[in-house]
Amino acid sequence: MRTSGLVRIRSSLAIPFLGALLLSTSALASTESADPPYQPPGTAGVTVSLQPDSVALQPGDPLSVDVVISGLGDLASPSAGSFDLTVAWDDTLFTFNSLTFGSELGDLTMAEAIEGTSPLPGSVQAFEVSLLPAATLNANQPASFTLATLTFDGTGVLGSSTFDVGGLVSDENGIMLPFTAIGTRVSAGSVLDIPTLGDFAAVLMMIGLLIVGLITLRRVS
Image (cartoon, rainbow, N blue to C red; front, side, top):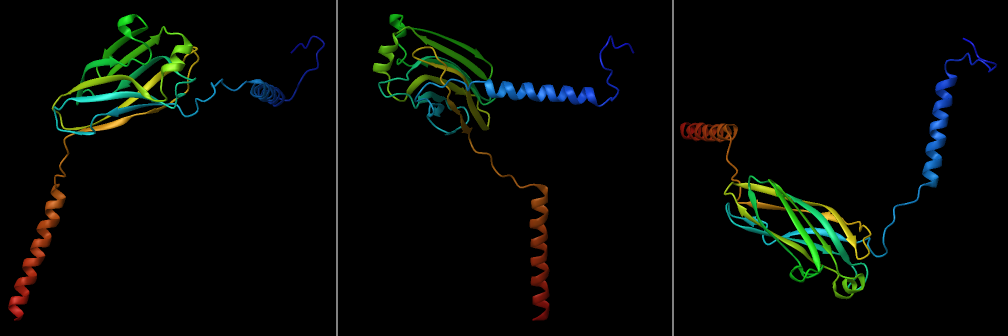
């Protein structure tokens, strides 16, 4: 091999070693220079939770679920300026009926906010963007309130369904608010514990042993 005046490296281990060294050095440099993600002050305890009106229903019963945000400033920053959330569930047990937005981000009838929904089988996406000034949101929003309320119709199928929520929430200045998502589980009826063939066999064996014992005792007496 022609080296064009460069020193020829004869060891086959030198190139992999140098490559690994360069990668580790660049990774260390990027780690040291990377800034931690920005988190607005006072947002460490923000949660978005699903709160059903009941967790135990009869098959076919309707269901209402509130999407509640908590941990905001109480009539102070941070407040919620917009959200884009998706709620998912088992559509064999519940079908989506309706979604009603809360009023804390603005009155929809007075064009104080923009909203939209996109329902799919087993999920629904909902978004709302407030058009109110940041100072108005901070002065009117409590620490916890309902973003939206979803209603469902029961299908009549026996079982239980988890309800999960995820997506994005921003504060009054449009900065993303980190939050903890809290789902829930709702049951439709109760599943009976039906004995298996093995259970029946064990019961029959116990009955047989009892009968044999009684017959033996009678013969002895």
